Length: 270
Length: 261
Image (tube, rainbow over all chains, first blue to last red; front, top):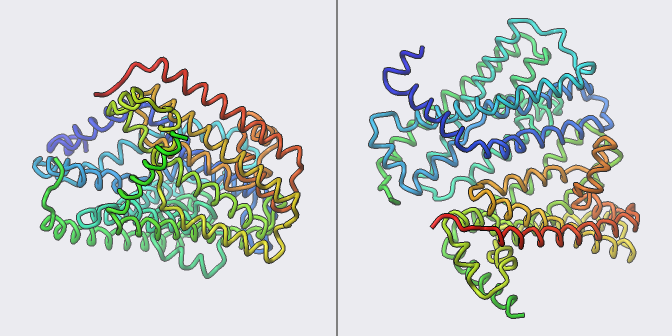
């Protein structure tokens, strides 16, 4: 695996990204606050609600859900929108285009490096927090195959987010500020239908149906739903199929945008 | 007075600058409108799974959301653009230039820029609050309105002191991007009433981490549930916070040894 990477420099680039992140360790604190605070707030909110009759989640479900949210949110995160639009604006894309290295691969590797670095504090934090509430969180149902699905779902979720963000990011060829577009298409809808504010499984049926068709659920809620053992095998397979469909669709969209965008791109900045 | 005139001129300049990019200005307003709507939808979906949160029903939560958006939008208009500019100012060495000018640096650093993109949010937030007033959720008695006014001032002063704290950090650490994210994380604590937290955390939020006074207390004032004691306590806390942070800013500038260039 690593020799495959070594042969064309991808491994070296990945290592370089790790080193760059270590240089800006202070930034990790800001990331940590961003990742941990909101899920903690939401967990507190959900633990203090008076439930409606048709809400399937118990306190234990909510605890487990928001315990995992920071980890999944981080692992599926992608900053390509900000990085790429910046690269178009300040002209550093010109340099990337000249390198004998797939220009978009860098963003992919940077995401991997960045997201796995956050695990250094996220995993201990999650375990410590879990220890405090362990008497209230049920994990008896966990078995190897479920964990395997869980890991696969995280990878699929990360890919889905990368592709959707990537397609928006590439619009920087035409639109000067894609971050606002990202805020709507990726931030707002993601928080709403991805399961950040309200776990998807507790949506009213009609909204849940829509959420399950859209790609956002697979970026956050889906892996956690698998982990909680609340999904049947057909539901898991259907989820993977839906996510795969979106990944392929957005990969094609990205490719089309990249090809046409490069033709119109006239390299401003310096 | 002279300082105010200078700031007004700077504001005019930033608005003219923003109008150069009219399309992106309009786009930003639309985005902010959507952001407001998403926030509303969040509460609507939230209340399909919950009847109430820590004793707040959906109508009362909408009042809290209105107050929250009002405070958030005001911060976005007045402080946020200055916060974004600060990191760049330190990095590029422009701060040194500003320090040599015969103006009050704290005022200049805090209010140099303005962004009108969130004006729409203020409008929608006021509309939301008016609607709740019309429906009788908000108790409009003179006493409540007074308490609401006082608590809104405290709320804005508290946010201003956090802002000062962050720009001090930017000067000390010389490289601190995404400070706005830190501020927004703090806002995440204000989106829900402080009653949702365990007792000890709630106590902290009313004392040395005064997040309760940012949205929860003004909202309770509108709902006619605030005690005058709490509101005035918040006022005292916010005044002392601004004083402490201004002192910190003056100290930071004194030990600042220039960066960038």
